[in-house]
Picture 1 (tube, rainbow, N blue to C red):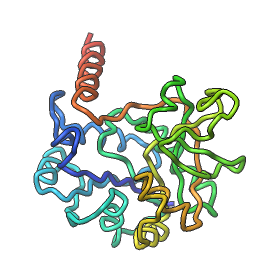
Picture 2: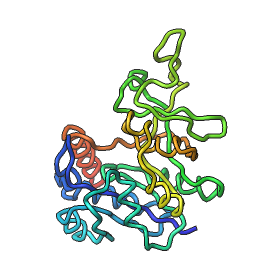
Picture 3: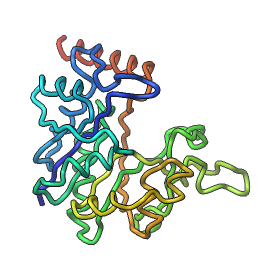
Picture 4: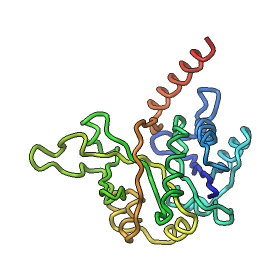
Length: 251
């Protein structure tokens, strides 16, 4: 099955303005993400979709396939839907632009989920928590899954709530959601036509639209999580790791 990855990229960012074009490593942040995604074995093409001419021009300097989309999109998913409308593909992978250390093997695992499960129309990745205090952090999204590996609900709150010694019980009873998705093309184009549901508006989680309208999201468990970049402090840590690894590689 033909599989492409699309990286939606906005120039504006509330906590870190101009984040995708930060260049303290000598490469744009989005360039690091682009290069990691290209390493995935099952991805035939990588596209950067942006509403910013500044981002478009920057991405062209490192040879990325880019497209300019409308500035009115409410989410990265909507932006991707516009970008792939006329592209011949079976599966689309949605990778956030601020994931410079994303593991290509995780991208392949996500694509393989839809390849191996033809009845599934959308998939995402989950992981175990490393520390118990992370579970109560509203910035880290939690997900409850069934025995069939389909997601039942996503929340910023602690789910499931442990009644005996809650709110957080045994750390092994909880999963965190990773913000990467795979869709079949037809499914993506259809869901982006639906208005936001009430769950999505309350939690500010766009994946809840899928569940509220009665569709399913298949999950795949991964062992390792690469940190994303939300703040200047997190970017500084990434730059430190990158320069350290480059130095070790040159020794």
